[in-house]
Image (cartoon, rainbow, N blue to C red; front, top):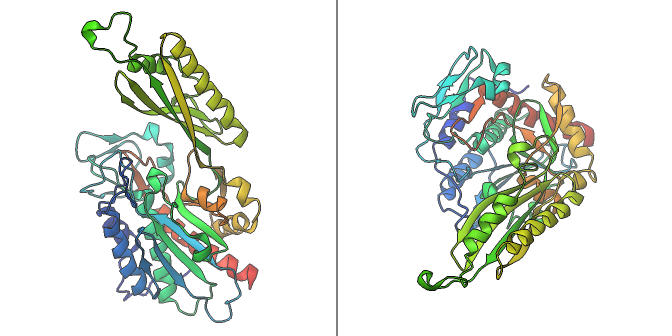
Length: 419
């Protein structure tokens, strides 16, 4: 595969990742702006400069914090369909992403990994994939923040692939588009993304986990917002009059079964998950996530929520509720089936790296879920990120190297098959 020049002026794959991880880019659930935090522009601007440095002269960031760039086809490959690679700049908002200290654990020998601060450990028993990384270098944070491999590993791998192409100008490739998006972690990564203007036939999000995995399924995702309405009376004169909506909401939450919650489900099982509550005596609002791999599985879950809300109100005479369902994204398999080359060529690319491809499903969603629905088929490719969204996040350097080669192999396969 392509090699770096010995005198390359560009940072290494790992150095790029470390530099990106140190940039504070956490998004926010509470913000009403887009992007949700201005700090995401800090990394976006860095990436524009780096893209230009490796020959993508049209690299730019727009007012929505979308970084886009184009790699023109090499001579003779102009008729190959344009493909794209996408990663997101923001990190998960509920764990600190400020002052990240990437910490190296070289020649990992197995067992738990001690983090330098707060007495935290990465437990081998909870991370069985660590067994595949024995003898390799593991990168973690220091125990006080997340690492940000989700999704700065994907960004670093894309940039490393582009650097290798830049340093090997005789390598044949079709046209390639790049996009780095904001606010993926708060479900808004593609809110203003113009698929038609972007101009790719197929895209790949670099935002997956273990080496060799290519994901073509996500949850179908809705949310339910249930608002319980009570009656507020001065507590000194409340007897037989007050209806505290907070207690009605409490009865609702207590009535939800543990079966079918995230903590009791796995694999292809969906779930109902209350994630937020706010209110007072008059009104209390509860937000719940509804997830199922099958579109037909969403409605029964919504009806279950409605049934439990009715039962809660029945316990409190004079109370009522209203319920709103918001659609988020759908299982991308429905749209990927319309463009079978997207998956077929990705699986072939993984084989060419020497790995056995794993076709998997995501118990979550990616930007690709919405992009696929918008007409841009977008499977998800592994980056190596593990245990993301927590202090114990980690990544194996070898997986990052495999992911970089997979990007190049995808470009190679498309060029060979479609020239």
